[in-house]
Amino acid sequence: MDTSLEGSDWGISGWLLYLCFRRANLKINGDLARLIDRPLTLPTLVKNATSSKTIGQVYVMKCASIPGHVKIGFGRFDPQSRLRELRRCYADAELIAYSAPPFPHGYRVEQLVHAELAGFRRKEYCRVCGVEHTEWFKILSAKAKKAVERWAKWIASGPYDRATGVLCQPWQEKLHPRGQKGHWREILLYEPGIDGSDTTQASWQT
Image 1 (cartoon, rainbow, N blue to C red):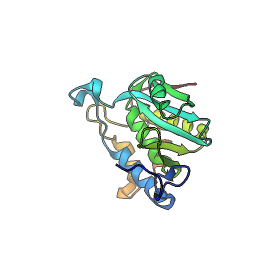
Image 2: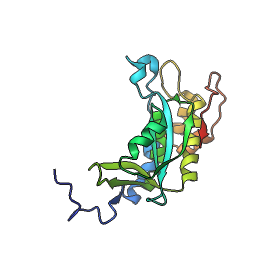
Image 3: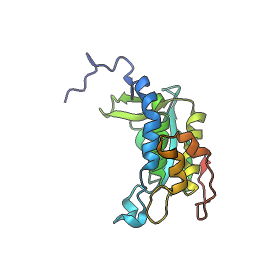
Image 4: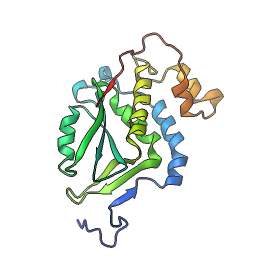
């Protein structure tokens, strides 16, 4: 396969928008609403819970050679292991922060953060490994961390039924008020105080 940049849309830097910015603005609310509404995959509902994307850590990384960009990802293993992998392509990769301890449904948190920040998302053709890296965001690291903290806190509040993984009725009503399309920010602001929520929240390690 020809991986040459000559004559392609990549340009000199190798960076492209992940989505057209106008398209991203139109998609953000809808993508988040669909993710919020999508039932969780519970450990009790999968054949092999240890191999499912249910428990893990969300991390934020940066590179001095790529100023103004951060990488936001999820892993089931120690973020330091992911850092070593990333340094094969980015020698100066640095782990800014990661959630600890590993928490349930970290992969969903990653998906929600990516959807919220879609307008800032970038992809790069890597000259080292020859593939596209798509989890980069042109955004301040503080803003990236706040987005992860928001959604990790929301997941920990227990918005999904523990037996079925389905979004609980109070949040469904906020997401679809009177059958209409709501806004995802209403979900984050809503605190129904449902008994049985997971009060164990991940903290940031820096």
